[in-house]
Image 1 (cartoon, rainbow, N blue to C red):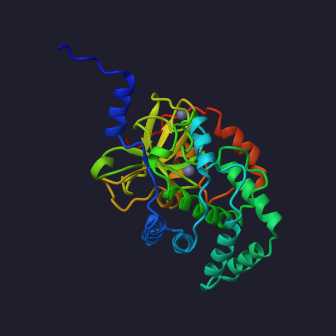
Image 2 (cartoon, rainbow, N blue to C red; image 1 turned 30 degrees about the horizontal axis):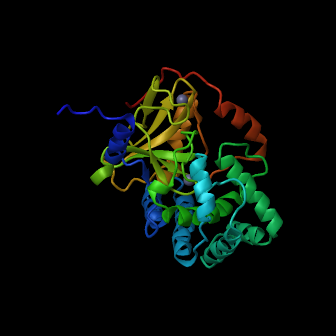
Image 3 (cartoon, rainbow, N blue to C red; image 1 turned 135 degrees about the vertical axis):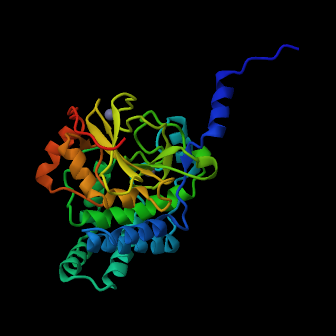
Amino acid sequence: MASRLMEPEQIAAMNAAVVPRLRMPARATVFGERAARLQQLADNSTIGDYLRFVARLVGAQQTLLAEFETPMPSAESIAVAQRHSMPVLPAMGARPPLWRDVLSRLLDLMAADTLPPPLQALIAQVRGLDGEALEQLADAVLNAQSGGSARGVDPASAPFVMAALQVVWTDLASRLAPAEVPYLDTPGHCPCCGSLPVASVVRIGGVYQGYRFLQCGLCATEWHMVRIKCSHCDSTEGIAYHGIEGTSDALKAETCDHCGTYRKIVYLEKDMNGEAFADDLASLPLDLMVTEAGFKRSSGHPFLWQAEQDEDDQEAQGRQATPGTSDRQGT
Ligand SMILES: [Zn+2]
Ligand SMILES: [Zn+2]
């Protein structure tokens, strides 16, 4: 009997079985592991106090993940999103009001710590904002995190607002099955919520071994992307990897000559404790080096925001090609 050739759908299904497309956030550990990594990185850092503060904020996020459970979108709205290749947990649009309760508890947990007076004042200031002001701040950070303008973002309060939103979206994403998440037409964005990634991680172990994933800056979902490819413009040419000599080779900046941007990439085979969000935040000297070489970040770190006057400029430059120089290090 003649054997039948495989249909394209069957081939795609086979590939999907080999390469895991998505890695949903592990509810019990996602923020706890990030906090531990930040603590670890703080020990050898010139910005150690700042990283320890962020570690406390992220540790509080893990605590809140155990306290809150946001109602899932209806089965109907999930089905509509699947039919239209839209994010099932869209960052933009209606928001679960619960996020403001999460923020309030987050501020309680932070205020209970001994903090320097300027941070205490900042927490008091965020606590004093009314519901409308908070919703406007949330709109602004989520718009920027989805690739839009950062207009209206207050850099000082944004990390707290973002931290509360991350708890809500990570909670929801952790309860989704990969099969429920449709393929989107916008490959550079998180398939779950439509936000931009923070950085890449090349994973080790089991079905993830050797595969590169992009980590969402909002819901912490990771999605597979082939290696040596720009995560901003999809170019497979003109990709280079830069590291700082004398530092760990577990972290590089992946630059693209085609669009002139970069994102960092963490190699767990070189350091199994690496974590995209934490390692990105703790490696500002690497940003400085590749920025001096002419590259722009393809998206900002969710906890680091620029003052308002830079936005238009930053936004325009982030999407325009700036050819790289030949001043390269690393591989
Ligand atoms: Zn996401
Ligand atoms: Zn590119």
